[in-house]
Amino acid sequence: MSKQSQTARKTVKDIAAAKGGTPLVCLTAYDAPTAALLDPHADVLLVGDSVGMVVHGLPSTVGVTMEMMILHGQAVMRGSQQAFVVVDMPFGSYETNADQAFLNAARIMKETGCQAVKIESGAYAAHQISHLVERGVPVMGHVGLRPQAINVEGGFRAKGRTVSERDRVVAEARAAADAGAFAIVIEGVAEDLAAEITAEVSCPTIGIGASAACDGQILVTHDMLGLFDWTPKFVRQYADLASVVSGAAAAYAEDVRTRRFPGKTETYSLRKPEA
Ligand code: KIV
Image 1: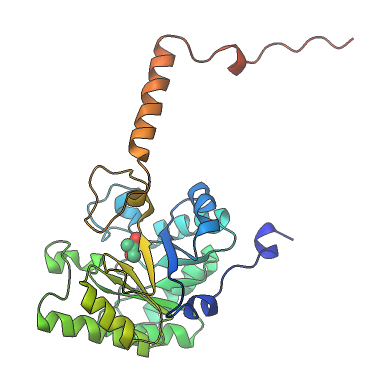
Image 2: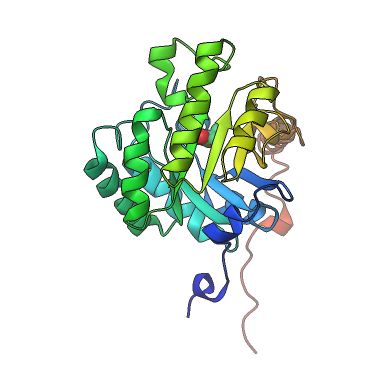
């Protein structure tokens, strides 16, 4: 029996039961070794389509493909044991209609073994969400700032600052929850709006740049680890890995150029002949 099948992962029921309780700890993960380090500490690992920007250097998440999400989803599943793993549905993989959404969601679930998918849920997506949930695919919604809509919005902008926009975000969250989403990410909104949505919907809300009023928090792991020189206002950096990595690379370069690396202990020598 594989290690995977011996250990119990958190389930959708565990995540849903966190409503109003101890905040859910969620982080993004894109590869197996990082997933293994995060896994003991996280309730949810999200294989976010932010992978396109964070790992592949794309200018937005629009260029992310199904193949990328599946490859990174497989790696995170291999590296983790107990966290609930959610894989983002990339731009263009679910918007056309409910059948397209189901075929792509089913492919993600079959090929990665993840437990749920996430959809950036404008009001139209309620139909997709209920269609997936009825067919056995747990869905996490995502409202507020929706990065896949960057080309309509003209940039990454906090949401809900006007009355009409505010009403729209509340309606989108309500629609996702009514359609059966087991949790909803709220991104880039002011505290009072996050609080209103959290009070309104029966599933847990997970905030990113959406205050402590949510039922859980998520950060992009690379932001939280300090791997980038710029991060949004809402990020708290828990490490300065950029300095650690560039310091290590500089020390290695110096050692190679001055022939201090490899040394005796890092070099194979002939075995002594057997007596
Ligand atoms: O793609 C992603 O990483 C996300 C989180 C920021 C919520 O959607």
